[in-house]
Length: 134
Image (cartoon, rainbow, N blue to C red; front, side, top):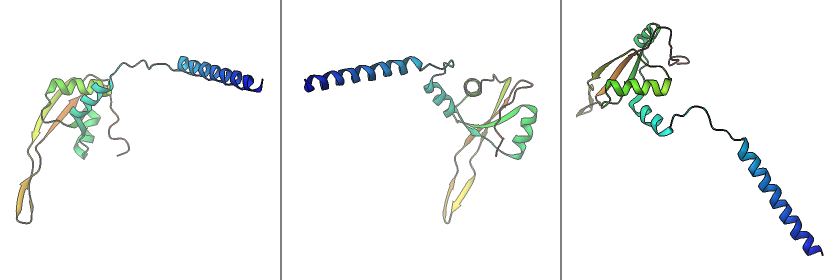
């Protein structure tokens, strides 16, 4: 009899555990935002980082934000990336190439990488909090 009692207790405990799991699964909800993580990763590789200088922070007062971008990115890709990452569609984008500086390590001379900068203009009244806490 004791053996049957142990078996029935095990079966009942398994049922309780499975009921708890189904309750927990019902509680989990999906977020409303439908941005895929793969597209976010793609756009974050286009916008490398914010270009933080004194001049760029003054431009932020006029809704001009400066980003270091991928050298292969064009204006349309930059507009899509800003919209995907920040949720604001830019009014215009100006792009410029920055030539890498010549450097030396003793006798060995070389150059730094060429980069690309983008100045993104947002609509009036829209802001991105890039420079807070820097």
